[in-house]
Image (tube, rainbow, N blue to C red):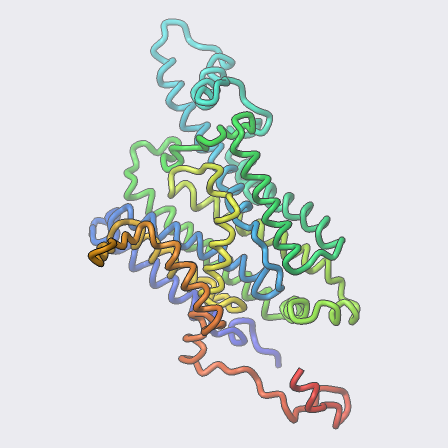
Length: 410
């Protein structure tokens, strides 16, 4: 009798249990619940960290399990943030404009309200008209759909063009980086329709929730982030545990052989590339309302490189490794760049960790790559005594004696 999914993947159940306990603990100790042991700003930091863990899981699926080193997944993350940010900014501005115009002697027309909203949002870039891409900014349902549809559509088009041409390896990584750079340069333009370098701001203020304190809203987003991470991890674990997971691992290890066996390699890669882009979009839609602002710098190529570093440090090819890497680097980064680490005075030079953090991160990445290729997740393997199966001497073919020692080594 075939074992259930949970029994075949006990690590997934352990992860979900740890996530649930962590969520309850933070909720009880948070400022919004009355305990006050965890500040609102730190609750937001934890919520954003969970969102980063979710996109790390997506990155591990596409890189750690399929072998596609994408340097563009943070672009999908940013697009998800822009889609929900448009609705948040539109509705918040509409509330301010309607409250202001309500005091006028002559009630404003609907068009006057729209013009006033446009002037408030786009006046900073010298415009007052809504671009076409803002056509559905007043509809939460449509914008939520666009959170996954826009990143998914971009990934599908890009992936179809790249994979059908059988671009692989470093060339594919360069193409994904070029896509990200092109998107960032476009968003920096004032006529992009997304306020150029100014980006979208005030996203932490939920429309119609002015009476709700930020301490409470931060808990809501923390819950949503934890729930999304749990579902994303469960989905990713389900993907990699079955036949689909075996095929994508085969593509990672020997793409030509998998193609020779008759599997549509390009279809598998395109599907996974598109699905992980949608997951990244969801993560971004939850991240930026907690950050409060999004601008084109968030989708710059360097952000996607950081994402690859997180997964490598955590241990690619292990879903829990990706989560550990993202959480570890994110929290340590906040600690170093937040001025909480005291500077080191060497007499002839003072080390300011705010300036040296990126160097420390880069050295950590090099050290992990050279000396601990399994990353932090490898420590979990030692604790659980997880070992690679010893296949020497086992029958790998339909008849006895089909195994050759050379085959086992390969």
